[in-house]
Each structure stands twice: as C-alpha cells, then as structure tokens.
Amino acid sequence: MLRLILVYFVVIFMLTGCQTDRQKSMNVIVANAKTEVVHSKSIGDYKITIYTPNKPTPKDGWPVIYLLDGDSYFLTAYNMMTNQACDRCVIKEGMIVAIDYSGESRRGLDYLPKPEKLVAEILPNHQINLPVSYGGADDFYDFLTKELKPEIEKRFPINPNKQAIFGHSYGGLFNLYAFLAKPIAFDTYIISSPSMWFSGGYMFDLLSKHLANDKRPTLGKPVNLWLSVGGAEQSLLAAELSLPEAEQKILLQHRQNRKMVDSSTRLFEKLKQANITNLQLNYTIYPNQSHKTVAIFALQEGMQVNFNAN
Image (cartoon, rainbow, N blue to C red; front, side):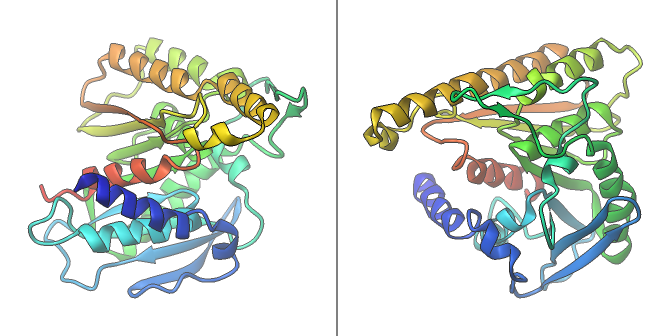
C-alpha cells in the first residue's frame, strides 16, 4: 500500500513539482491559497504562496512548513496534505508557505553561503562550473527569520513547536548552513540531497569548526534534522543504461565526481558522532532514486514528521 501511495505522489510530482518554468509564469490557483509579493528591505522581492486550511484553528496553532524553491513543490505538498490528512490519519492539516521569485531566480545567491575562497567544480567535459551568483545565505536567512516568519506569525496563529523548512539540492545545503551557522529558527530541517560538493566541500569545513566550538549554541528543545539522498545519485538508473555509451560515461562520471551519497553519509556520521543534545537525527537513502526524483520522498517523510497528530 505504501509503495502505491509513493508511486501516486511521484506521478503528482512529475506533473507539478517538475514544471517550475510553467508555474513561474502564473499564480497557483488552489482553494484557500493566496499568492502575493513580499518585499524584503535588503534583498528584493519574493513570490510567496500561502495555504491555510479552511478549518477551525487547532488549540496550539497551525503547524507550518516553509518550502524553498516553492513553485516546484507547493502543489506537491498541497496534494500530499489534503489527500493524507484526516481525523484517523498520520498527519493533520497545516499551513504551507512556498518561497520563490516572480522574475529571474536568485536561488544561487540566496541558498549558497560565502566561502573565503570559492573553489570551482570541474565538469567531466573539463569545463569549469561556477555559480553565477552566490554568497547571500546570511541575508536570505535574515529575510526568513526577521521578515517573513514574523509576518506569517503576526497574520496567522502558528504552532511555535511545529515549524519546518524543506530544501532540496542548493536548498538542502542552505538548510544545513542555517542549522549550523545560525540560531535555531525551525523545529524540523528537511535536508534533501544537499549539494555538499559546493566549493570543494566547504560545508564540511564549516561543520568541523561548528562541532569543535565549545561555545556553539545548544538546542533548548528537540529539533528534527531529516537528511536524505537518492540511492542512484552516484550511479546510473536502470532506464539510463539504454543511453548511448558516451552519454552514460559522462553522466556517471559527473555523479561520481559529486559523491552525493558518500557525502550525505559522511555528513550523517559526523552529526551522529557529535551526539548533539536534543537533536533528533534521521538519515535515509532512497533506493533507485536520482537527484531529480528523490525530493518527493524527502518531502513526504518530512511532512509526516512536522504535521503528525501528536
């Protein structure tokens, strides 16, 4: 039964989450959802889509999930919630706040931190891969925590103990950066396939410094860190074995260079060994899932954690 449910949502994801360009050209039309432009004082405008259930507010307020790359994941999260939430179900309905852009994407700038020295990625074709823009993660974090979250909490009754943030790829890297380098602002960090290869593994250096710092902030209450990666992110999917041999070779080399599975496993092991008080740590490798397909599974389980009935 679980497999059938997951297959269903993979289809939904393919029809919704992967159609980012189309969604960016329109406002999402969903009952009880509203899309608006929120102006940041320092880093520009954001397209924010907010879903609120048309039901009585729970006594503790609404649980909420913030979605990075919001246009790609809003409809998927909405379908998950409205199809799976009921009185006797694993999850209960809550709010969705999807964050994206009305015009050109600034995700590289917003999601990537600023290393002292940026290390370029060398692609299998020997070309140099450098982000067009990067280094604005601190400013974006300030927008989230000092502008957007306070505005949401002012307008809606929010459960202070059930606030999650979801990010995939660059978004996953940002969530890890926010967890390590900034005050804890969320109760659940859903870190899907973080781009640990960025700048020669910069985040591992930051992690080591964080764990070695005796004065690092402690967790005053339980925090969930839900880390995951696709099992085929470092190999080829069965369907890809029909590609021309030259294409297979380049694709495989690219994935092996980035070491997504190895890096995620290494990240988990370091966090586990640190034995951080109040950190509820979970790591999942989803078999037969690539970087493009695995986010749906991470979002599914992360929502079950944040919107659980307890």
